[in-house]
Length: 449
Ligand SMILES: Nc1nc2c(ncn2[C@@H]2O[C@H](COP(=O)(O)OP(=O)(O)OP(=O)(O)O)[C@@H](O)[C@H]2O)c(=O)[nH]1
Ligand SMILES: [Mg+2]
Image 1 (spheres, rainbow, N blue to C red):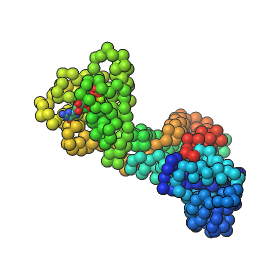
Image 2 (cartoon, rainbow, N blue to C red):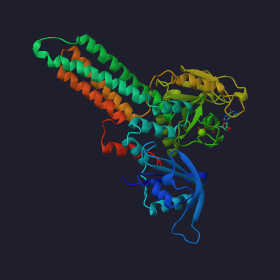
Image 3 (cartoon, rainbow, N blue to C red):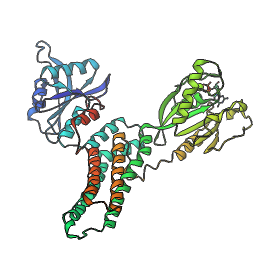
Image 4 (spheres, helix red, strand yellow):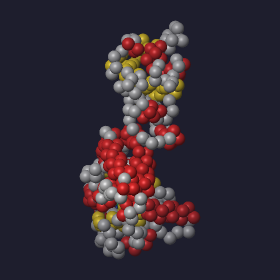
């Protein structure tokens, strides 16, 4: 196993940057470029002030002053010896330090290689390693709560309890097998069915939580649609608190969909501003309008902007038949125009002014109510598509086992389905995995993690 190194802080200029070195020679390599306390002799979990030196530069070897933190195997993130060097955050210095470490015998780490080593050395299971990556990507309180819970091992513990239940069920079935010749029934099949149903219920509830989990992690898709000039882009800018989209009194200003995320009331929303819906012969605008229609079909919530200045130009036909909840927003309240009639059933109707300095809390409250994501009570919420697929497969195989038990199918065939369930659940924590799957998972991590 060779010693790897990488900058673990983001690219670019910063107050400090941290280089991480992990592997059997981490201390020796660090000591060759370090003037200060000998890191090979340092106690684990201690930090030391010193100087980074380039041993090949004899006249002026000092590169920077910094702090070295020492972690001894196995009590480190990777389970190996680790030195973390905090230096000043100039991109040039960062490159120099990494080149220096490579010249002294370290190798540049691949994306996610530190986490992969942590997994290989049993410091984390796969679900926990993925939770660390989720933690790095977290962008709302709700997503953070889930990442934290998975990082603490709540998901892994739940899966391990399910695995124990499945093994117990298999053992009971095997008893049936061993004594089948003697015509004795050791376990009442109804009891086995009830145990399998309980497992199936838990696994399928976890799989179902993915719809919520995915929305919490990646943002609740909220399309802002309506006629041209209704004020959609003005509302987008207001919700994002940013000058993201061009606003103008010219009808058809927005040609393409424009999207960005914002955290509101602890939840992440992905707002999508769309080209105004109108009849047009302009080929580019037509493409924009078909993109608006595509955004409507993918939306979890539709904000339908209505312009009281042009109440007859509204075109709700594109979404009146969808089941997606619609919030009708009658904009430009500051103009004091009559409230147009809303011809369709909506989840909420709100009058506001996207432009004027008017409180838009009624809209954000309506979003929260409709999103209605109960992230506080769910025992386990799944946010990872890989886990979702495995749980779906596990739901199907337990369902087959229940059917086989009910149909009095021989125990060895039932056990096969249960073993398949164990396989799917174990793939989540990585108890059963292949190098290819690991490479695929960890290659999506950042370098330095
Ligand atoms: N008085 C008033 N004007 C508004 C309000 N919101 C938007 N406007 C104005 O309405 C015009 C159109 O606004 P946009 O946000 O560009 O409208 P849009 O719906 O994105 O229009 P398209 O991109 O053409 O589909 C601009 O001149 C805005 O300044 C509002 O609350 N009150
Ligand atoms: Mg616009």
